[in-house]
Image (cartoon, rainbow, N blue to C red):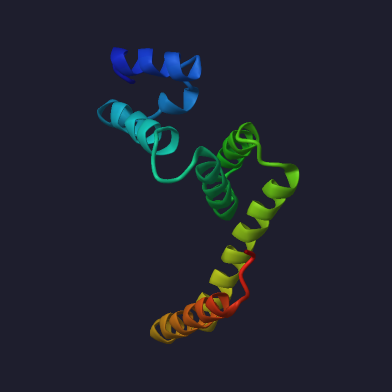
Length: 134
């Protein structure tokens, strides 16, 4: 159970103490809320929109209906369109698919790292050589 201070903070921020916090052991409940509050809802380098899309992508990849529902609602609240939601889910699916391919084929990790560095260099060179929009 969360402390009274955390309970008050939850009620102020969310309008309630959500049921998902109740099963967290007493020793960790306040800390768990602090992580959500500070990282997901707090001001960080990522915008709320970006965080919602990252959350949706992760939720999709781990196939969690609870997280998918929450982060979809969060993304919609941040103005992400149905097309944007579909794109985020598609990217998450691509990552999960290619992770399966790479692991199943046992692609050599060090070789993959080198190839990625070469790809990044090539794309950066192409971008630098592209005509400016000015």
